[in-house]
Length: 542
Image 1 (tube, helix red, strand yellow):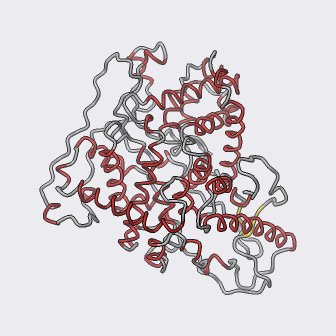
Image 2 (image 1 turned 135 degrees about the vertical axis):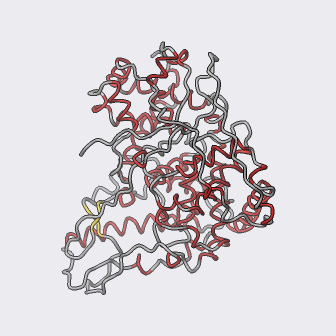
Image 3 (image 1 turned 90 degrees about the vertical axis):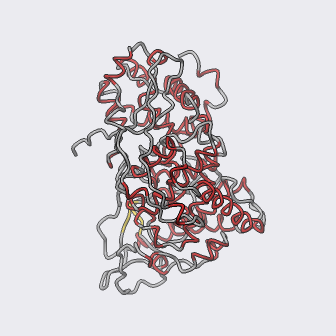
């Protein structure tokens, strides 16, 4: 398979005096991120609002003026190692993100087989027990659907994806008002029965037994989650323990909100808390945009308008105007509430997992294929507000990644280099020999939490574990994940020169990664964390 060309990357200004002996001219020639110009303006269609509640239409019809361009930082010899305006200079190619890949295999005997992923592997043992053999007896492929007592011919099931209003759950309004309705609601008919073709033969006894074991493991784990989440007062320690190995898809929206501290643990307080927090966000939006876009901070707004259409290129959900307007409001309201950092490119990526996970609670389809305009307005308001508050919770723990000079990222990249020097000496020495600076590739890994390197679905599975680790996981545990991620490619990297290393690390072959690969990466990171987290003095000296 031919290698993909390196995707367009955001421009990052570096001070060569701090990282190497390069001159300013050398860094200008070797800048692997700069791939174009940032002077483009968003299209007029992106300046319309599909939904701005309670804002008088007359106030939104004022003539629009061209937004003021984002000022470029002057070149100087200050001690700042990163330019504050970390911005895109060219729209990322869809190859920037791993394409969505279906792992369906050719049907056997009328049963659709899929490669076993991490969800089937996750056990119900203690949290943070990577590499355990709890599911070792389940190997090979698994069959989609639940097991029926009798294998009889069933009518053909229409497997075409539902992308319109038919994908919206009929009980969507109930879910908005009662988070526990996610658990109480019955499973959809499509998920309750296996998909079979008319006239097809029954599965083999081996396939049947394999399916029974797989279903038993999934059922046991889900029952433990349900028992934990339906208590009058959720045990956070137990929820984290269960979540480390992955959260069932239908329970993830509620579990994430609890793990982030957005929802209170006592059940009787949740509905009133949601109503209050969603009302607060709605008020912030109305107050912020009451006088139209001309009253906004044009530097921040201009950059958001540039970055939002580039979020998850090629994914239908993020190409719809409704989704983009929601994301614009989320990012701008967060930016003005955090003036120390404002908006920094990369934060737009961090909002996408929340939006997709919370949207999945209200539909019976893949969120990436849905136009959110088909959702009821109250549902869309709830998804947007919940995404805003959970994004805010996440960023509170890593805000020093985005303030002036971005000290959090500098610190993490430095510690990553020191750790790799300890755990993979040949790789570290090869990178030094090829004059590869860790900042040249690891900056984006820290800034975007590896979201440019793996798919959103892989990211969602990774964040299950991050949230189970605790509030510092997105800075502390992520350091060990990035180190394990780099070492994973060690053998290939040690055969490449400078140009090959940079191009490879900017476009990694993770298109086919499933939950299994993510869980292996998390397991390796757990081992590194356990070994080195309490041995900080050993980081120095390299």
